[in-house]
Amino acid sequence: MGGEDEELFQRLCILLQAGKQGCEEEKATLIASIFLESLDDLGLPGQDPEVANDMALEALEQAVLDSDCETRSRDFLESIISELEDDGLLWQCDLPPTQDYEADRDLTGSECCALMKVYCAERKETVEEWSDATIQEVLHEESGNRLSSLKPYRYRVLFERYGTTQEVSAEEICIYEESEDLQGECQLCRRCVRLTKHHLIPKSTHRMMKKQRGLDSRYLSRTVDICRPCHSAVHRAEDNTSLALKYSTIEALLKHEKIQKW
Image 1 (cartoon, rainbow, N blue to C red):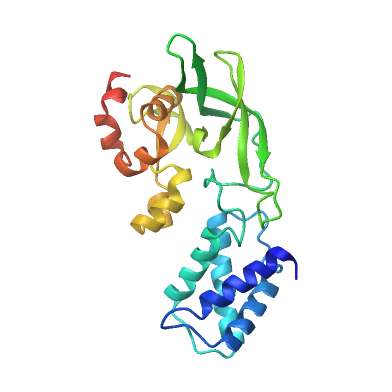
Image 2: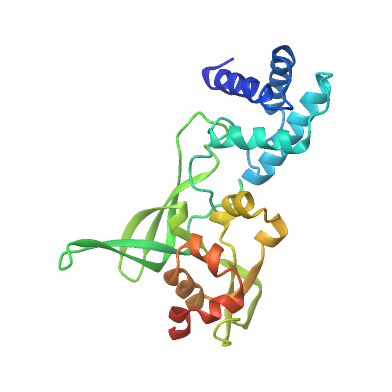
């Protein structure tokens, strides 16, 4: 067992023995052993992190059954998976949650809106502004943690309007997805133009909103069809967290002062 797996094993044993539903040390050790053996067979590489979490939970439930231990509640086991993830022991989870990742999808050349940072000599400070850009390269975290080599960590983007290239984090980028309708009426400005999908709750905030608000995947995945200029205006108006907490409906976006001015 490698150092990383040993740390996961020890932490899992402790969590399995904790609380009112905790089991004896011998059972906890057996469950942890079965769970670790099953991780390598789960086919996690290429899975969306949320899907991978569900698969890990199912594996832990099965490990409890296989150990002939008394059934533990799903909430108890789900809390253990959450703890392991927060500790960074299942896979690379200390990085910001990112756009949904597809293992076979090449994002190079994709159009996006990203946070550009420019030093203003006159004001003697760095000025931040959301602006349209093109992804030149997807960078990945180099780590031994599970799935870390698959999750986008940073992006190198070109701000074509200014001719500058910068690296941005997953929290500082919104990758445009074309609407299935392609051409139609923008739900913000009402012009009939080419459309993109705007996630009312930005993907980078899904994990936070799921934990804090208990929102399900169907609610989190809601989108509206808006044009590229309006999409850029939305992300210039607020950061992703504010969009998720305060502007997660088309009605709320329409009332935003900066978006109204746009």
